[in-house]
Length: 165
Image (cartoon, rainbow, N blue to C red; front, side, top):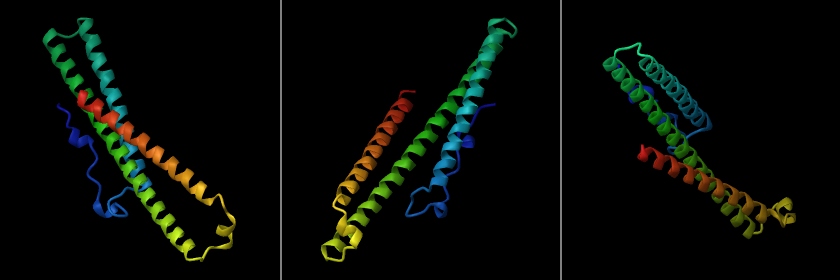
């Protein structure tokens, strides 16, 4: 029968399962990624089924009209699974991006709090002795920002590939 992407897509996340105002945990990201991989495996199985149908048709083992219908059906199933896997990958990347942005916001809050504490003269002996602390924080911040930019670009590429199909 016809494939339903809905049945292969995971249900929307339970709002109570989300932490920190709608962001995802690492376990939820892993679950999304595992589901995407399962969809990719199903897509490969559907691709194999489609190739078998085409092989039987080429060998003349099935009537022409039946072969065409079977080939169309298996190709539809393969495409539906491919789209579901792409959507799951986009969901994963969007969730990961959201998590990284939240982490940056938390880091910036901590740094601003640390900076305001320092400006009031209540620095710890460790913080007083570490001249390179600001440089280290800036380096970490730049690395996180580069990772977010990379993830955004990857998400845009995937969205473009989905709209092309």
